[in-house]
Image (cartoon, rainbow, N blue to C red; front, side):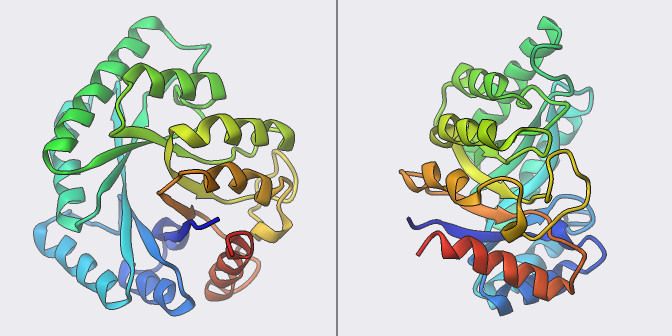
Length: 255
């Protein structure tokens, strides 16, 4: 299968974005997801232009902008234009957003309706700038479960709005494989990080994951044209060594 592999700059919060880009390029990543907090600062044209130029110098595509725009929140209206402007200035084609603050099954209908309305609006507005939307699959959001993620993306029913799938650490390995099979066709981005045991907190190298990474990647080899982005890495080894090892392991299944 052929999938581009990216690095999320959030994996090194304590480093400058330029340093992360330099290391990502040096070890051979195809692209990066830019962290939508400290790494973009004020999000000004000057800042974003500097980041875009630094990525280009390293031969990296900016695969997505990892914003924290949250549908269904009181801040959504105030943040919408600012976050889309940053994505546009970075020159990426995908902006990541969040689906509310309640988990599917424990959610209120009003919250679901508000998230859907906001997600439809941001999808239409992003398209004006040539952007697609990717919705983070994460706990404490409506996409936490397979059922919630699938229903939300299918409710929006727009090719410009897809899922940013990621294996969650609270989920058994066999269930993750079922999730990946069901959600890969609805996804345009993929996050990778892991632990050695389910529900553990300490991140581990992908090669030591409690789940079968090859089985997770397999359904993404069928028509998926997004990035598999290494989101976080172990702190048990030097950062460069950690990101290089995870890249090598992911690529071992893609060649």
